[in-house]
Amino acid sequence: MSTNYSLLFYLKKPKNYVNGPKPIYMRITVDGIPKEVSTGRECDPSKWSSKANRMKGTTEVVKTMNSYLDTLVSKVGTIHTAMTAAAEEITAESIKLRYQGKDIKRKQFLDVFREHNMQMEALLGNGFKPNTLKGYKTSLLHICGYLEKEYRSQDIDTRKIDHAFVAGYEFFLRATMSCSAVSAAKYMKHLRKIIKICIAHRWITDDPFTFYKIKAKAKEKEFLTDAELRRIEGKLFKIPRLAHVRDIFVFCCYTGLSYADVRKLKWTDIAEGVDGKLWIFTSREKTETSSNIPLLPKALEVIERYRTYPPCVAKDMALPVLSNQKMNSYLKEIADLCEITKELTFHKSRHTFATSVTLANSVPIETVSKMLGHTDIKTTQHYAKLLDNRVAVDMERLERKIENKPASANQAKIAERCTPQAFTFIKTDHNGRNIA
Image (cartoon, rainbow, N blue to C red; front, top):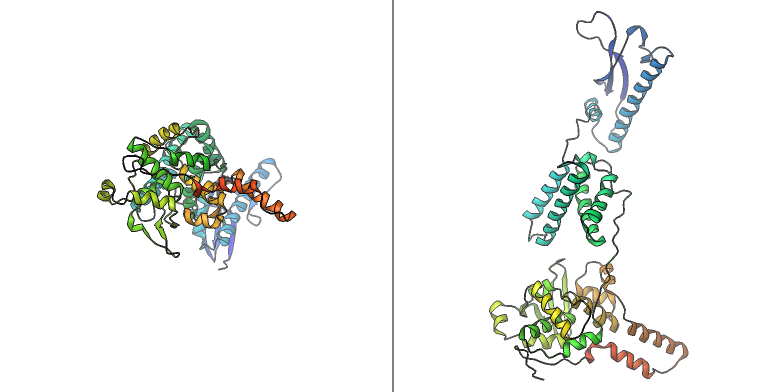
């Protein structure tokens, strides 16, 4: 919608005026409706040109005054242009308020952050997970610490959030809070979300992230080789708790389930798939995406062993999963007993499924991504660390294809080492006794 807009300066006669300088006022007119604003300057009437709307003369005082008035013309003109581009309602009053900074309701940044967290807490179980809320609460604490240390303040006006604030916050996370690059990147993403909320409400006009890139080098995903997995499978444990933890860990090595997903697994999640065999039909706790996984013989063997196990039956669980802390603690014992030098954590089972069990055996990455329940195949690519023996098999196959040679004994030998189905798995009962 086009508007007729004009601006001029004039001397306003004060009440009870006798003589001397008069204050200079700026008159903003839109569609014939005027609003006046004081410039904070004054001028003797004898030195004012009503025709030019400026002071008369060539002295430095005159030049300085007229330059200041030109600055006001430019400032108000910029406001009018911005409001036109944003398709805002343009009136003399709205321009005046924008010029005076009164149209934008002041908002404190931490208030916005707290309101966001309160809304997230109200939606727990309906789109948000407790751990997600926990992360944002930690982010809020970090922002509070940053403001106290660098700004000597307990909050900050949203309009003061700029590029320097963003860059300084990342440095604070890394240097003061000793956050890793990955953790710092996570907190920076939280900050960016809150800033986007402020931009949407026009509490922030310029995006401070425009020239800022969140940098986080992906942490290398460590996994078990086929030999290491075979060693864990074939180990006889006399202590029941270690046998149970080993079984659950191995089960996840052949299904790719995370700790949260295997802990909530029930027999009702297992049904016949398109091939007539048993599959797991579940949704990921983390992303709520579906994850349908065919049960390999090794995984089926483990889960069948606990079908009638009293603690599992009583709690309606497919497997006797302990707390994550206990699982990881017992896995350290298992690693020592199996002479595995890698730090053995439960999540390594998922990494192992993605690499040694599937990708290393030529399962397409798209299939692996679907079974893992990833929403983006780029996430799967972080797991896709091809084993050297897989590379050796593929390159020898290429060499044979080029030279039209039959498969070598070396290729067959490497391929055999690559196949987890060839692993020996000692069967044990609930108390860890060998029943093979």
